[in-house]
Image (cartoon, rainbow, N blue to C red; front, side):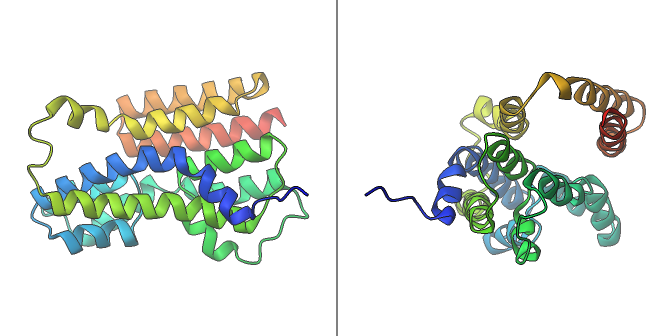
Amino acid sequence: MSRTRPPFLDGLIASLPIVLGYFPIAFSFGVAATRSGFTAPEAAALSLIIFAGASQFLALALLTSGAPVLVSAFTLIAMNLRHVLYGPALMREAGREAGTRHAWAWAFGLTDEVFGQALGALARGQRFSEPYMFGLGLGAYASWVSGTLAGAVAGGGALDGWPALGAGLGFMLPALFLALLLSILSRRQLPVIAVAGAVTVVATLAISATSGILLGMLAGALAGLVRR
């Protein structure tokens, strides 16, 4: 008699590629935080509460440069507004019968990579499951927080002996998301992605990185609506 794994365990296993990408980046964030004067508990608290991936490096730069807390907060919110669209987009792919009773909890873990992994699972015919989403999000969240704590405990000079490694870590998050995106890419989606990418690049060069992300997101959403 065959036994199927619980959806929560399936989610944890599916999170392993994200875990492998998150931990070293979070480690470097912990190192950067202690180098900026934060204690290990303070660095871990930033990841525990904010959980914003690469945006946390911007938060460090803003806080250490003396920027007002409100300005820092609004900047981070603007950079991460795209996450608001992840839940509705995911549920649209899941179908009307998908349960959302505990969405208020598992939606906290909808980072770029978690969203990409969940969307890929749906595209491969997997049925939507809230326990699966909890497992997927928990794996990613735990790796980010533990990686931050490990980096903070190691101290601000932990990566000084490996400058090439420190430089390469900054590319791991976008590379991971790109890999997840390519796994669910179809020919029909190419024009939408091209529009979003072009607007993001142009707006980033002409205005700022934050504006590029926001305008690219809006352009992609509009292009998607037009193609429907």
